[in-house]
Image 1 (cartoon, rainbow, N blue to C red):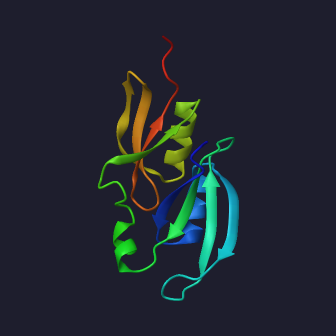
Image 2 (spheres, rainbow, N blue to C red):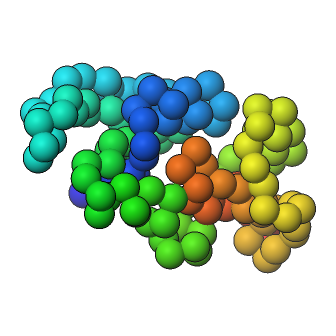
Length: 134
């Protein structure tokens, strides 16, 4: 058993794909037409995920006012997603160069280096480096 996808509500499919694929380095796993939304707008099944990962993000375009209000607020201002990388500094530098907004400077924690960043929708993520050796 594993968690296959996690839905992340976004304003626009293409902008979200560009952020996750071009800036974060995720793979685009699927981008297919899907059934229409409740109000008849076109809908897509868009899945991105980090290279070699099993769990992906289902990028779900906000459908209606209620979902629109949830864009960027899925975790009520808390960090809700955690991206662990092997080479923290190179990922941090590449993301900054790509325009990713970091909230504060990187810091060392017992679980590794961490820097909080905002995704394209405004959700908070932790960029995590390797765990320290015991």
